[in-house]
Amino acid sequence: MSAARRHKYIFVLGGVMSGVGKGVTTSSIAKILQARGFTVSPVKIDPYLNVDAGTMNPIEHGEVFVLDSGLECDQDMGNYERFLDTPLPPENYMTSGMVYKHVIDKERALGYGGKCVDPVPYICEEITRRLKRSQEKTGADITIVEIGGTVGEYQNAMFIEAARILKLKHPEDVLFVLVSYLPVPGKIGEMKTKPTQEAVRTMNSYGVHPDIIIARSDRPLDKKRKEKIAVSSNIAAEDIISAPDIESIYEIPINFEKDELSDRLLKRLRLRPRSTDLHEWRAMVARLQKAREEMPIAIVGKYFKTGDFVLSDVYISVIESLKHAGAAQGKKVSISWLDSTEYEEDSSSHNEGKKKLKELSRYAGILVPGGFGERGVEGKIKVIEYARENGIPYFGLCYGMQLAIVEFARNCLGFAHAHTTEIDGNTAHPVIDIMPEQKENVRNGKYGATMRLGAYPAELLEGTIAHTAYGADSISERHRHRYEVNPDYVERIEAGGGVFSGRSPNGVLMEIFELPAKTHPFFMGTQFHPEFKSSPLKPHPLFTAFMKATARESLKKKR
Ligand code: GLN
Image (cartoon, rainbow, N blue to C red; front, side, top):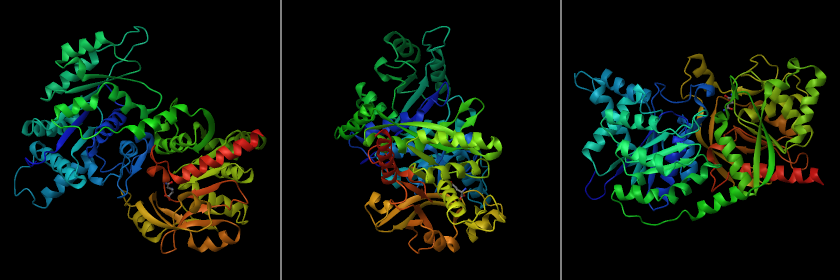
């Protein structure tokens, strides 16, 4: 760190339990500091040994978010990008796997010159090197580092140790924020502070102390308990910020500013605010709160259930994108999760299956998101057929596009057994097929980070719904898939009335499929994942087009 311009680091740690909104808290802190005129760069650290998030089952991990670079990472990266409206580089994500792999590879290459490579200090040094590399890449004034999980987790020790050393070397430039949970046990009916006190003590055992505590709970923290934590944890009461549950995550930055959190952070970092501009953000939140008219949207997939719980986290970017586009049009999106296996013929009698399909008419729009593998595929195809035949606005993302093509080939082109070779390698009509280089990867068991990943350009066809929605001739969108529309079928699909409104610049890969406006109110599928590029201040143009179509169609139904 040069004396002329010092780089600041804020470490965000979790107390008591995970899943209480550390990611959106980190995003919100980043947002309020960005609004004070600083370049802010959030970094996510995940303690697991997977080198990236790409090989994990969504039920284990939630959504796999994809950066422009193609790095498959944690969904919190999506939160950061949505809050800050900035694409983040791969340097802003690290896992224990990534760090250890680098150190071990370096050791194998004699990179440590014959030393005994102990985790301390070498793993810690590698962590710090990565943090500095991220700072250099982004040129950030303030790097905010979120360490996944909680302080009590053994596997976080190296990361906290690296943070401690950074603080030791640069005491004025490093801050610690503890995001802790305060339970209100049902029977007792009182907010309990003891677990948070324990979390502070655990931090202390690493040699670090929180500068700020964000008190997460289902209700606000009262004065009495604030003082209790203050006294027991040796921290000023004003530095304990109440963060109760709220309706929309986008309100959090505004709530933090009610407690003047950015002032507090900047004072401790010895930075003078350069501006205050949450203006646009406040207007967006007001729009979100005002949006009353409900738009019922069905998301049809398979990853939703684990035991008795529905895991909507798997599709967090899709949900947020729908909300962004809805709110901009004064609509409140209400999502129903439909399990695609329930639409399959063998799961119900023929008549029952038909009845279930008919119930789809109550939705203003249907969306089939990305997915992998066989389970529920025939059900998704049935749902897509129903949406196409009954003029229900349909939006298919990645797998949702591929299956729309399968449906179209089967029912509009008469290729009864058309399929994707992901499911049926021997189909007579492989309308969706694996690319040769992908076949090689799979044959060699190379699954990690080998899909078509990250940002690719596409050219749009004039006069199409996609072209109008984007208002542009070329676009860049993020991908994550192995299969593609089979080029051998493109002409036949077009002859049958399908339109490929987006293609790769060399014309070989089909990126957007749609039906002309004269045959369907809105029927579109994208090979890419538009949901990775929507933010509340800039809803994605295709989600906007989809939501506009749903609003139009439900208005027609009412008349
Ligand atoms: N399973 C499909 C593929 O690999 C779609 C992937 C996805 O929806 N992200 O091509």
